[in-house]
Amino acid sequence: MTDVVTQLLLKHLPTSSKKNRNGFKFNCPMCIKQGEARNDTKMRGGLKIEPLGFVYNCFNCKFSTGYTEGNRPNKKCLDFLKTLGADISEIPIEIRFGNNTVRKRIIPEVPSAYPIVKLPQDSKPIIDLIQSGFCDPEFNKVVEYISSEVPFLLLDKQVMWSPDTRLQMNKRFILPFYWNGKVVGWTSRYYEKKPPVGIAKYMMERPENYIYNMDMLNDKADTVVAVEGPTDAKAIGGVALMTNTMNEVEAEILIKSRKKVIIIPDMENTGLRLVQDAGKYGFSVSLPKWPKDIKDCAQSVKECGRLYTLYTIYNSIYTGTSIELETRFKTANIMRT
Image 1: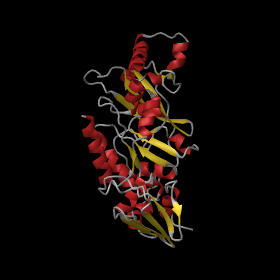
Image 2: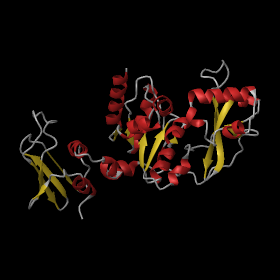
Image 3: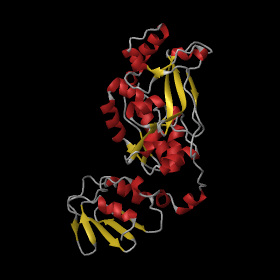
Image 4: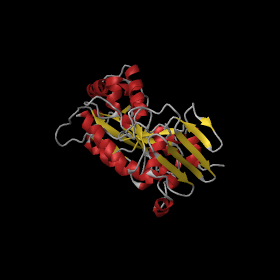
């Protein structure tokens, strides 16, 4: 059986490829990148399959690369695979970044459980209160804020309101944190874009190393999208790290899900740290080409719709080292200005 890198290559060979006694020949996909005036149309790319890998040469642009099992694929090899349309995140991290990198990383222990907590006093789903005809001046303002800023939350039964006046809780909407279907925390958002001085925009009770919406890590989907904020996660059906960084325990929780992880940073300067963390742990990053006044998933869904948002996310996925992803992020932000 061929190694995983060569298997990935074979899986993405052009449909017009022709098999020969050494391997395959096909139109070289690298000619334009190598400075040639036009694409190869004479099948001058030659792929030789060897017992422990492959060797590739183009007799037109002179591009060459290869791979031998047990080694780390170099930049030329990865670029060749990506140009053929392969998703290099399918290559295991220990191969893509080298065994030494993986051995040096101490695998942290992930939480086996989180303590159960209570939501703020008398919390009820906002949609249930609306349908029952409930009326309260502060509740009405919360509903107005949701309708204006995050309308996709209005019908969600997990979006709550509490009449508790302590800490201005009656002036907030509440998102519970679930783990195995049980409440282990919550976050709340004040109903004005800019709260008065001295009043926190967000208040929460969060267990250590908890990822919002993490129950979906146990579903059958093979991909999960991780964003910064809970409303962003709600907007697109993902999980949220609730900050613009990711620690080793949170990364390990995502790794243990055995899903392809796609990180979406907020498209502003603060998102750079999350991009660097994604590269560090071998995750893919999506840098959607949104209009310049849109910085996150919640805003994109509000302004452009969920279908458009998901399309731009899955059409802008990149994989690479922290430095490579950082460069892409900076370039993407420059193009938005």
